[in-house]
Amino acid sequence: MTQPVTRRCGYVAIVGVPNAGKSTLLNALVGSKVAIVTPKAQTTRTRILGIAIEGEAQVILVDTPGIFAPKRRLDRAMVRAAWTGADEADLVLLVVDSRTGLDAEVQKVIQGLKRGGRRLWLALNKVDTIDKTKLLALAAAFNQAAPFEQTFMIAALSGYGVDDVKAKLAEAVPEGPWLYPEDQLTDISERLLAAEITREQVFLKLHQELPYASTVETDAWKAGKQNDVRIDQTIYVTRESHKPIVLGKGGRTIKAIGAAARAELERVLDRRVHLFLHVKVREGWQDEPERYRAIGLDFEK
Image 1 (cartoon, helix red, strand yellow):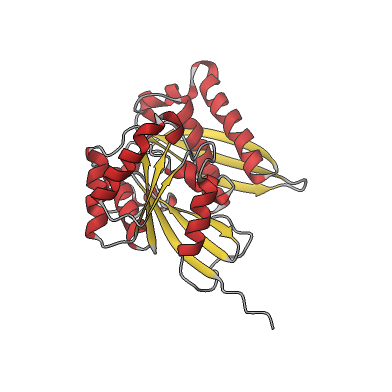
Image 2 (tube, helix red, strand yellow):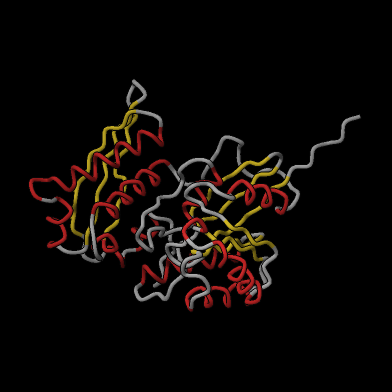
């Protein structure tokens, strides 16, 4: 008689300081783009679930905003989302940029994780960018700082070491039934994913502080009859002076944002996309509860 197959399912929080490569790792583990990625810190603003299947295990990955010293209400909401993700997970995977190593910011995150008594794993990321002779000493320093059960050396962007992380996570999550359908990759709606993809291009095409003072919302989504969709979105900025920067001379900047976002949306959604972007000024959007709800954050009064 054949033995019954034991299924596994559990939550893994991916945490770290900004720009450690958490979202890149999430996308690599899932095998599809479910989180936006830019070279700028604090790109991720909310918790995003990515669902990875490995054999009979369903690993529910929680991509969290980078943990940093918050200054504004939005910053505080992002950091709270990160810690909440860590609190609710079966284990925590700390992702660290190997080039920065065990700096003061990372040490603060480790101290916070240790206080929670969580199961801790470590992924030293971007190992393809530093001298390999330094890695063993770096790994030893981290394992002296905290009781990591597992330590991985990876390069999430190229995929190096990612399969090993995925296999070990599948073994580590508890036994239990799967919580999501086999073909589901994330818990966020297509409307929110579309807004995030456009916001990704805002970050990539604009510079300095403007991206952090902007947000994107999907206003309308209308499916066509020929595997196409019309998407209307608004880019909100906080000042009237920001609006011409987003538009650009002769509308060049917003056209570039729209073209890049549309191409990425067509790739991710696997359908033709008609994208229409608008820019509006909302001086206090960072203090409006509905804006927080739109991106999945809790609003603190």
